[in-house]
Structures are given as C-alpha cells and as structure tokens.
Length: 373
Image 1 (spheres, rainbow, N blue to C red):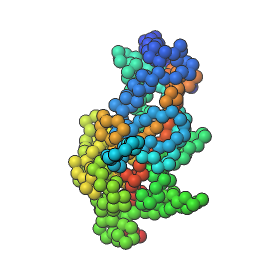
Image 2 (cartoon, helix red, strand yellow):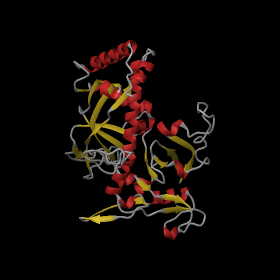
Image 3 (spheres, rainbow, N blue to C red):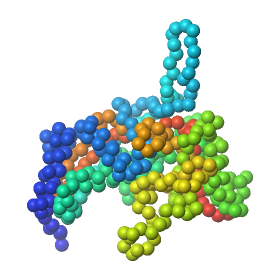
Image 4 (cartoon, rainbow, N blue to C red):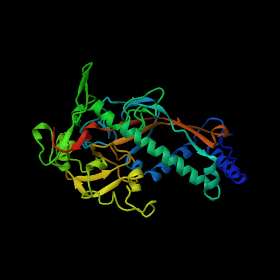
C-alpha cells in the first residue's frame, strides 16, 4: 500500500523559513527555479563542509575561472633570491608551471529528505542549520570518495556499478597513475601513444616476516614507506611536510590505538569502528617510515599515499587540491510529494582533482599481508 504520510503544519512552516533564508542569502526570487549561489553563500558552504569533514580542511579548495587550464602548482622550493647589477630584474613565479593540465567536470550533488525526517527536525529551533550541516557533510564525503576512487568521467554515472564514485571524475590517485607512473608501486604499467601510465593490472605487494625484497615485498609497513620516499626526487624527499596516509587494514593498534575503541552510543554496547574514521582525519601518535601517519575518510584498502597535507586552518598548503570553477554552483529546491520527499535539493558545480606537484607524491597499492605465493 502506498505511504500517504502528510507533512505537518509545523514542518511546512520550518520549510518555508528555510526557503526564505536561502532566497535572502542568495538574492534569489524563488528556490524552485535554478539560481547561482552568491559568492558569500558559496564560501559559507565550503567552510561548512570543512567543519563537517575536517579532511577537507587539509587540502586546497581553489576557485578558477576556466574549465580547462594549467595546474597552478602552489608553493615551491625553487630559489627566488637573486642579485642584479643592471635592469631589468627577473622575478620568479612562487609556484611551478610544468605543463600539466586540469580539467573540470560538472558534478551533481542532489539530495532528498523524507517528510518524516523534516517533521522530526522541525521541532528544533536550528532546523535550517541542522539541514545545512546534513547536506554539507554528505557533499563533503562524496567529494572525498571521488577524490580517492575516481578513475574516469562518465556522461551518466552508475552508482550500482561504481558505488564509490569511480565514474564521476578523475581523482587524486588516478591522477598519479596517469601523470607519474614511476611514483606508483603495486600496479603494472601500460604504454600507449608514447605515454606510460600505471593503469595496468594489479601487481601485489606482500608484507610479512618472510618477505623477499628482491621480489618487491617488505617485512613491515615502515620498510615500504621508506622505500616509497626514497623514490622521490631529492628535493621532494627532504620535505618535512610529508604525511603517510594509510588504509585502516594496513595498521593495527600499535599505530592507531583509538580506531577500535568502544563507543558509548553503540546499540549493542560492543566495540565499533570509530565515527572519526568516517568523517575526520586521524593522526597517529607514532610514525610510519619516519613521517607522521594518518587515516583519512574513504581511503581505499591496501593502499599507502605519501604527500604533504595542509595544516589545519591554513589554505593553499597541501599538495592535494580540488579546483572549482568560480560562479558555477547552481541550486534549486522542490517539493516532491510523489516520491515522498518534501525537500529535494538539486546542487551542482564544475570541479576537478589536482595534485599540485607529482614530485611530492608517491603511492603503493594492492598491498596485502602474507608471503608471496
């Protein structure tokens, strides 16, 4: 039998207040017609995503004018000091242009809330903020999932076949496979058209006491991390900003004693994976390969990435970026009683994933524990 749930008067008043607030902030005549986000509202949305999922506070979120352009490569260790006895002087760009391209794609972040939830939330005086946080968290986690797992862009994504967003955009790890094959371990290379990429079949790396390094295996994760860092150019290897990002399956409580701590709000009172793994970056008190170690949301299993991450609260300090086209954010909201969702919120923006300098990024994937067969 079809559900005939009807939104309460209190719920309708809460929605009307939410709509009025969104229209006022963005200067929109109606929320039910597509409108562009006001720059202030756009920045507020980015800030809220950072607050809800703090890993976004450790990467660069950069607005650019064009859909296609040259990677900005923020920050550099190149020498900018000089002397000059005659004019003209020769200023140095405080970044690096290495002919690498960024390309932005339209990404949809459409959400809906059933009327029952709206009725439940409408009793809270902060209904509008509660809803905004809910959307911001969902969008932020989706962006991160695509960043780690995205391999290509499809005109029509298939969530059933690609539940982690593999077909929505080209993420950071795939960028490294495509742009710097010699900085990727655990996957065979492919050469086509004179270009070599690390997009071939899996080439497993084994970690165990009986590991044979000549076969590409290691006795522990520290040895693997040291070897990855050794593969960087000398100037990148010397950076003190590198963080070893690892999947949870590669580490135990020696490195992350809080991962499997009991949570007081678990239904059965048992041990449960920490909520922080889902939405926060967790820094270990111990190091891997002599560098700080971290577990971040949505990171793929059997994988290790070493690269500089930004410092919390400081922009443009990370080697990982999401570029967004300025003014490309679009939104509209509709009542949809036929699908039992009063709040259907259509959001979109043009964005892409960028590694600012591939010199400063190395990764290993298809890592498993045990002896090579």
